[in-house]
Image (cartoon, rainbow, N blue to C red):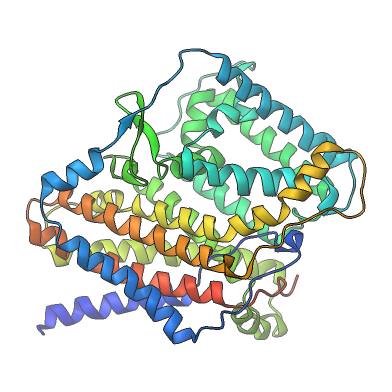
Length: 459
């Protein structure tokens, strides 16, 4: 091995170690579901190596696909879908969104105080963040039509101030990290009054931005929730091609050029991935054991979590950019590192969607009966509500979702490489750092899924 290759291998190993140390995701609000993760009975080494091998083997299979026209046919395959010209569905969607928004505020402030019997709590966490978000990457993004703040902004005046180009998506990055921090450290899933107050605060900030910079500009550039749903919608098999709805293979829309445009949007994708990672990491026994000496030594727990959130995001972003530089060197290309970072960021959205499905599908199914009961009688407190008890084999669905997200990401990255590089060898070689990161990231995420969940420590 040449000295140059040793340096590349050494840096790549560093990236992998950083990612392995960072952990991965689980669902927030597990206290609502009344349970947590259970340990997997399969030996850990076998469980992790099998998941990592599956991702690695998929890359080897993808590397044999070197026919550019075949790759284009796979990504271009689809069937047109009938689209109504009527404005009625859009109006109905806006009405439903507004009704849900008013319900969250009214029941949050006036309804029962028990989390499992409060419709506002269940509507936000079960119906919106679990249920609606899953439909976004499974069938397509409907949030833009449902978004009640977008509907309210239609009736407000606008100053139409120019939005600074240099700012870009950075307010969305900061906003997403702030929402993740608020979700993790505050009892938003347990206190309906606090949840309704948070919704009011977010509404004031969002509508103020829409008034100053214009509704379309604010929701397209700065609003973190809108961008999360928009990116998740790109994973769905239903998307727009040349302005028309079309059925495609899942994740193929992620190969659209300039989907991620600029380092700010790359940072947002990484923040979305890190957000679910952080949410899961802080409920593992490893996090508790690692941070207990720090808190015992005098580090305030209220400071520990935002520091960890910021440091982890910087670590994830730095690791990704390092992988980009390694890819550029291994592929021996003159393409700019920033261009490669933008081109290979969209596959991470498939991974994020796989994590979300793995961690929220069971959560959603467990609490759907409770959501239905509270929907029928929102102001009364039934005391107890029914929940669904998934069968023992259901844990395999989450494992499959994590691996499926990585497999889609590998194919999309493979197609992006063939679109970016003229040489087949360059395209294959450029993927080495990214595939190695994905293999270790898969093993890390599966390890967290296999660990028991503990209460959030120190808070």
